[in-house]
Image (cartoon, rainbow, N blue to C red):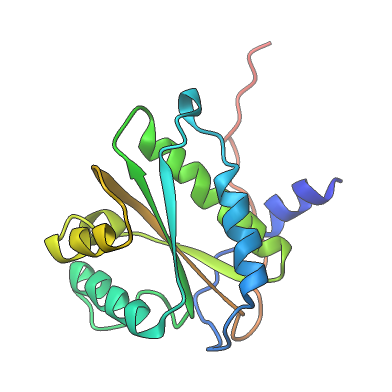
Length: 172
């Protein structure tokens, strides 16, 4: 089996992280993989905001938890959050989803845990977070697609679960 297929089959969501920061070089590689995701008509509408600043990360976690109606950290203690947003053009939601997939696979390749955390859409619909994006230089209509949290797994890496039957149908 190829290494790519093996990574696709063994990547799992990690839901408990050590506080250790990931090296910048690893984050750069993961982000670069995200920029190579396929996009409809090659519009490349998704952008990635890499958050390693603990204060911003914690504030973002709080906003996400509030949307969820919880006081727990929805980022599971992960020290890095890669926010994927996409300019509202063409197939932007699908394109952003492909970016999320590339980010998680690249992280797995580098021995880094990841998990897709929802509610980026709701958080980045809030005026405070829209303004924050503008301070980064993002202008236009962007929608939050997902938060890819990254970190080193605190405990055993999740195992591969059995696949459900009857998920593929061939028409020959």
